[in-house]
Length: 136
Length: 223
Image (cartoon, rainbow over all chains, first blue to last red; front, side, top):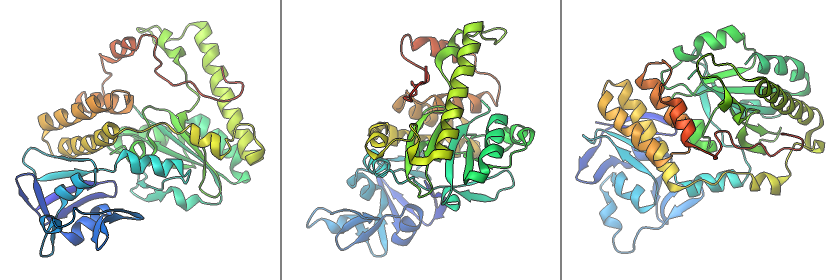
């Protein structure tokens, strides 16, 4: 089992690390990150990164995909613990910048003190002052 | 935060919500006493992984984003009414000189008045950017910053599972990749010191020299 940390949260998945590779069920990668393999390439939302022609097989075996290799190929940030049991998947600056340049406020759900999740989009129809603070 | 509650009470009938996010990797307990003391009626949530900082390219607190009724950003991430006057604070008594106090009040009041003006007047407000100006004020993100958020999330998780030495190395890598993020650096210290004040804070502020701690707020009339 490996732990996947993504902007959506924390997931446990049946995965195998081999060298620089992380083999995961394709469905696990898609649930945790939103990225999936399609005929046109490695895709999330309206972005698709084609795989190198003739080398598609290096990224898949059966129902599994090499998540680490796919992320590197798609120029998406990735970090792993020393024992490769925990993998943190990020989102590239290019995707982040495009999202912010669209001026559509990125949505997120976060828990209150009681654990109830609030989403920014729950308050559509109101003007929102989205503000941060910290105790430190 | 009492300021935000006051603002919310005053403006809620105009269709207004405060969505306050505490960046607290030590979890809700680090923020609980503050939130309970403020008796917040607005949304008050905890962001242990600093996910908001990743999504909105934030580097400091307090920072804020103004979002209109349709979900469009009318003021991208910026400092929410604070300024570098705090650097002249007496570091023992933690008090500001008189001119610093005046600047603090002036900036806070101006920022809050601008927010009021936008809530009441919408796109007519001189403080709401049009699309072009809003885009021009989006902070540029780099791939090192994106990778820093990855390492930060990993470090936070490892810290929670007791792998402290490896966690601290991951957090240090995040801070190395994103040196402009005071959020990452200060949160890293807060985790290491379990909430105690960071003795290295002022030295790192002083290293800024003529560079700013809080970016200037680009708003008509703001000092």
